Each structure stands twice: as structure tokens, then as C-alpha cells.
Amino acid sequence: MASILLRATYLFTSKDGYNWSKPIDLFPVYRLPDGFKKKDDTAVAKNIDAVMHQRMGFYTAKNNKLLALGYYGIALYAKDDPNDGNGVGRVVREINKDGSLGPIYFIRYNHDFNEKIPITLSIKKFKG
Image (cartoon, rainbow, N blue to C red; front, side, top):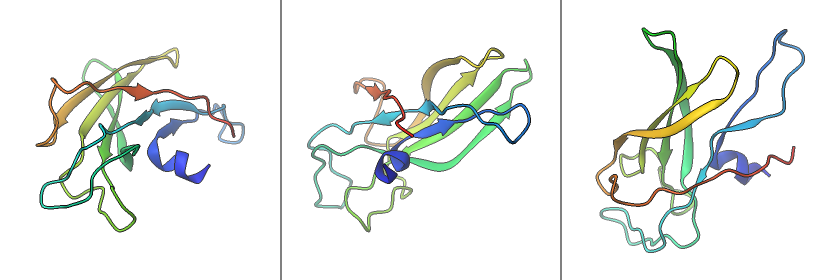
């Protein structure tokens, strides 16, 4: 289960700080395209998921919308740095007042990705 938690970001809510909701996928798993290679690296992606970098945050916009921000990094092997500037990119998503989530938007792609590359996010049920 730990490997699943490293690839996605889950959102829990609580009204009192003691009782917590079941987790929902805030930023789900993103499967890298097979054959992807980082610049100046020989490793090749095959059945590998991006790493949802956990330095994410929340922001309240001027229009009072709550936004969640994250970063999909890439670690092709154990000692690879997912925050080396060679990841997929930065994402944002609205958390609505009723707790529902808006679509995920890429607000900045890193150099090897762009809006023309299909981005497929996998939302799976949490089994915890």
C-alpha cells in the first residue's frame, strides 16, 4: 500500500479534528508513457507511474475558490530525483464548497510534456 500512497495525493476532511472522512483522490495516479526518458539519463519508463510530489498546497483565490496545487514528478529508479525539473508538471484543482472536486488542470508542463501529450489520470478506490 505504501507505493500507492507515494503516487497519489489523498484528501481527508474533518469537522472536529478527531473524526476524519475516508480519503478521496485529490491528485490521482498518472501513468507515464512507456518509452519516456529523462534528458541526460539512460533509464526508460515501462509501466511506471509519476510521483505526486508531496510539497503541495492550498490557496484561496480572490473569488473565494479553494484551490489545491500539486506536482507530478518522475522517478524512473530508486535513487532518481522526482523534483529535478524533469517531471510532468504542476497541477491545480478546485475543491468546491460541497466537497466535490473540479477537473485537474496542468498550469505548467515541464519541458518533455505539453497539452498535446494525452494525460490519463487513474482514479482508484482507496483500500485503507
